Image (cartoon, rainbow, N blue to C red):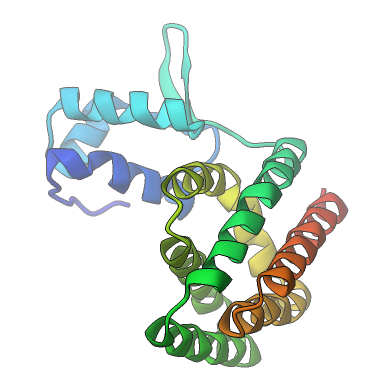
Length: 213
């Protein structure tokens, strides 16, 4: 993120978080308050508060007498995060299947085709973005505030590892059909099938993570 970007103080957390997830700030890269303050044209106090919040999220770590840096997440920790996510994701998928309305059914059906088109065309950046959109829709439809909060935090911590998998063409070809199965089950308003498809998808993510380590 070389360009200067003015953001509201309340948005500093979101902007720095997204920069970490997008890889603009690399694992173990120092996050210098004065540099970030200048880059985003906000006060050092706002930056300091943002870094403290991101430390609580597990994205940033503070080093004695050296300030903050981006926390590196190991494959082992990423696998553990996905294992914890399984229970929450299953809950969300079941509730989404039970609560979805006709408008959201159309939205998910269109998204499924967009995801397949992205993978078929080799546009894996768009596919990764559509994955995030699908997850956000399911969490919104499920309407479980605590599950949403916990999942967003866990997803942020393991995002770098999952993004790497998303950009593997072989994994993406399998993953897109796993996502399609989840969407099909939710659209069919079948909670049991939504649970099974979600559990299968996350189990395969764990397997792929371990194989890539």
